[in-house]
Structure formats: structure tokens, C-alpha cells
Amino acid sequence: MADEEFRHPRLAAIYDPLDPDRRDLDAYLDLAEKLGARRVLDIGCGTGMFALLLADRGVEVVGVDPAQASLDVARGKPGSERVRWICGDATALPPLRVDLATMTANVAQQIVDPDAWRGTLRGAYEALRPGGHLVFETRDPAKRAWEEWNREDSYRVTEIPGVGAVESWVEVTEVAGPLVSFRWHYVFAADGEVLTAESTLRFREREEVEADLAAQGFETLEVRDAPDRPGREFVFVAVRPVS
Image 1: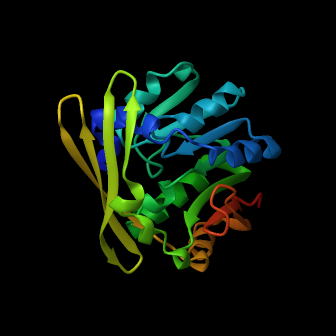
Image 2: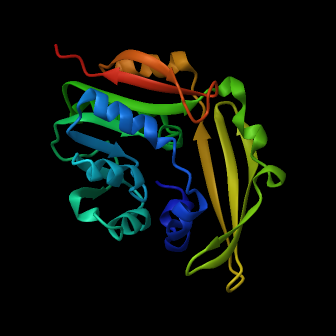
């Protein structure tokens, strides 16, 4: 199930304005171009930012996400009719044959259940044509990113057109092995409504991810650094072997 910040209509509507800097997607766009991908499956597409950037380049895109509210936002954007939107997850996809499957931002880490994670990788494998690629990122646990997830470092007030000022901040609520849980707070100045959203991410070691990929039939071609968070994330490039 998707986190509340993606399922709640009011929170889904402000997701993009609260995080407008998506330079992290540039590396994915460049890789899609270098691979010559003409058909892409965007797993955990959310509000459709990456899917629509691909569609603008003439790529045939399928965006899948379990949060209906986020998909509603995506469908309301210009050019959304060029993307095939599916409410669900990668474990139950219609028959596809794509050149590239992606999980951008926190998508891979938000799949915390081991069975769901294996099912997602298997779903991506089955959706890819032989020779097709899977690309996703995950934070390096050794960098302990969650130590910066506190009110002091994250508090901000954002003016959003048509909404007004929104206060937001995050705080960690529990660290249990590879699982880090945290709570986002949102305060809407226009009417004083306060909303919270609980989230949990799984921090996987590089070797663990490589083993998971191999177990589902993938070959890991490369583990790159993330240009937007150098030295702090792994970017996995895997392929469904031709034979």
C-alpha cells in the first residue's frame, strides 16, 4: 500500500510543488536515450513527472502506481493522454514488452516487504523484452541518511499557488535494522488543517540487492553513483539476459 502522502488527495496535490527540483531524473532520461528505449515501464510513477518527461520525447510509457490520488494528479497534467496509467503495482501487470523499466527516487526503498520486493523485481523482469534493462536507485545504508531527517534540518514554508502557505517537516520515529520509519507533518495556513503521513524505507546493502536481482534472473551490469547525491546512493543497471 502506498504511503498517505501519495494516497491523500490534498497531499498528492502538493507533492510536486513541495519537491520541484527533480534534477535526479536527468540521469534516467539520459540513460533511456543511450539505451535507445522506445517503450518504458515507470514503476511507482507517482504524479507522473518522469513518465511525462519521457512521453515528451516520444517514448511510449506505462506508468504504474498503487496510489489513486497521485495518478489523478498525473492524469490532470498536460500531455497525460500520451501515457498509459495503471493503478496497481508491478506484481500484477498486463502483458508488456518494454525496453526499460525504472524505479526513480525512493520507489525501490518504499517496497519494504521482502515478498513484495521479490514480486516487483519478477514483475519487472517479465515486463521486459530479452535484452531490456531495469534501472533503479537506493541509498547506501552506511551513509545513514536518516540522521538528517529532523525538524531542524527539514522545516520549511512553501507558498503554493491556489493553496497558500504550507509548513512541512519530517522526523524519524523508529530505526529497526534496515527499516527506517518517519513522519511528515503538513500545516495548511489557509484553513489550519494539519496532516501527517507515516512512511518506512528499507535500506538494502549493495550485495543484498545484487543477490535479489540474480535470484529473479537479472544480470547486474553496473552499479553507478547517483549524480544528485554523489557517494550516498547506488544506482543499479541490470539486464534481462537474451538467453
